[in-house]
Length: 450
Image 1 (cartoon, rainbow, N blue to C red):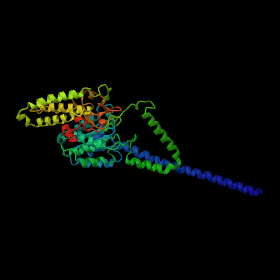
Image 2 (cartoon, one colour; image 1 turned 60 degrees about the vertical axis):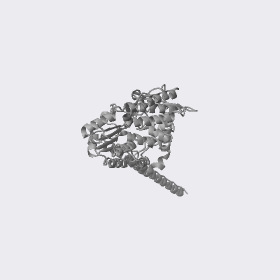
Image 3 (cartoon, rainbow, N blue to C red; image 1 turned 90 degrees about the vertical axis):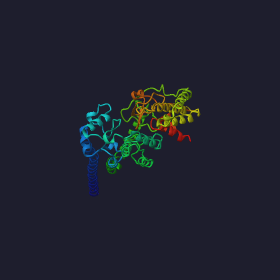
Image 4 (cartoon, rainbow, N blue to C red; image 1 turned 90 degrees about the horizontal axis):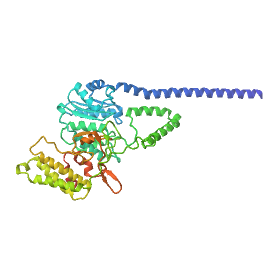
């Protein structure tokens, strides 16, 4: 019996030793595999970061060899496909095209208007051409010189307005990459509107809109690295990973809702198609004091229309034959059509159309007088003088001098339940920005009210 006990004891000892050895081997294999996977995840990222330009001189050297620079953070999921598409589109443009979607250069990090400054520096080194420059710190800048100087950015703005109006979700946000694609495509046929089917095709691409989720999309290659890591160690560390993810998402959501710190919780959507959530440097906001539509807007609009109508009726036959007179007549007809609806948004529209008619009458025989364009933020503001990136959006639009310095709130309309920014309404006024985003407001209104 003692011999049997000794044998069993020795057997148990050997089994225990074998188990410990197996655990050590498995642990070593796991550490080796996990370490290799982590290196595969980190090393390519570090190498890629080293390969990307860090200064404006680096960007110049890159553009000398390749006119399109897109870093993964700006590639919307497939940097290579985006790069190749832009290169193909640029080949059809009559002049050089340079596209930069990248991290802010280290030597321009503290510069105001960094994209515009970078474009100027790039042009001084590379010469005239079409430059589309957007850094993560924003805002983006488009400049055209030389053979591409006749590029009309309003074509892109109209296409973006169309895309956003028909985009997915409640607040679709076009990506900067889509804007770059539309800009370069429009440059191939200056002055011509982009075909709807072409715009629709681009809008259907996975990179056309910023995802509605509040996390950044990884580049396709980075996704493969993560998949490699996850396949090997997911089973062993799933509990830890899920705990961390849940905690991170919960914390991030809480911060966004103002539950932790409250700083981001007060950010609101600027309107349909204009909410990007602070992509870069834009004009700051000022209070909503002037956001309401004036109570007497219907009377103001009618008085303005009658004054413009009287001026139009005093034109002679020669003046009536000129294009500005035709444009004025069309604006007056559109204004008259919406004056009788007793809708306050229509009344504002009639007011803007009357101002446009007056301006067209002034332009008769004076080619240097610009067309009237209202402030996109609030058409009751003074005339727009500059085009700027709208705060919290992906688009540029004309604004008045005051909104250029400090952006006000969008004009609001009173509804049964709440005060609502006009850009959130399903109206011709929201789609056109009361003429801030289109060249012929009257035509849009007349087609809408047939």
